[in-house]
Length: 289
Image 1 (cartoon, helix red, strand yellow):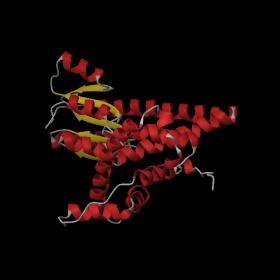
Image 2 (cartoon, rainbow, N blue to C red; image 1 turned 180 degrees about the vertical axis):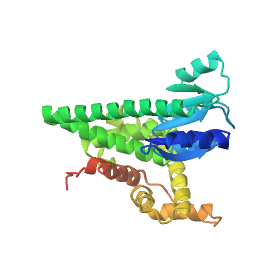
Image 3 (cartoon, one colour; image 1 turned 90 degrees about the horizontal axis):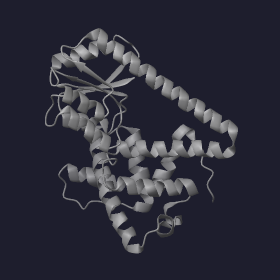
Image 4 (cartoon, helix red, strand yellow; image 1 turned 60 degrees about the vertical axis):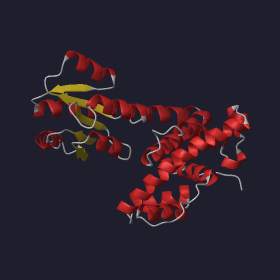
C-alpha cells in the first residue's frame, strides 16, 4: 500500500516510517510537516493511506481531511494527536478518519492498524473484481457498464492529477465527458443544450467555469513539465489535452518571458480526454470513421 505521512515532528515521521516499512509491501510515497504541501501532493499522488497528525500548520488535521473530501480525494485516514479530547476524536471520525492513535506512538499498534487497513482494501478490491467478472458474464449490457465505469474512473484520476478536481468547473467537465463516453461521440457531436436541458446563456456560463478550471490545469501541467522535463506522460497530456504549444507558452510565462498565453480549446481538451479514457484497462476504441 502507498502511504503519506504528515507530522510536525521529523522524529515522529521517522518513527512511523520505520513501523510501516517493517512490512515490505508498504511504500512511503511522501512525507511533510506542512498541511498545505500535503494537500497539494495528495491531489497528484496515488495514496492509499494518509497518516496525519492533528497539530499542523497552516491549518490543522481536521481541516486537511475536510479539504481532501471536498476535492474528492478519499484515502484511508489514520490520525494522531497528543492527549486529544473526546470532542476531537469524535470530530475526526465524523470527517472520515478510520483510526485515531494517541501519542506516544506505538510501533506495534501502527503495524497492526496498517495490516487491518491493508486487509480491508484487498477485500474491497477482490469484491470489485468479482462484481466486474460477474457482470461481464451475465450480459453484454453489464459488460458495457463495467467498461464505462473504467473510463470514467480513468478520467477522474486524470483530472485529479491536473489539480482540477477541487475547481468549480470539475462537475461540469464530468457531466459532459460522461455524455461523450455514453454516446461515444466527440465534443462537437454532443447536443449539450438538449442533453443537459440548458439554454445558450447557461451553456456559456458552464463553458466559462470549465475554462477557469482548465486554466488551473494547464498552469499545473506546465509547472510539472518544468520540474520533470523528460517525463513522457506529461508530454502526452500536454499534446492530447491542451496542445503542446499552449503548454510551452505557459512554461515560458512561468519562467518570466513576456509572451501571450495560449488559448485553450474546449473541443481539443474534451476529445483528448475521451481518447485518454480508452487507456483504462487498455480499451480499444471502436469509433465511427
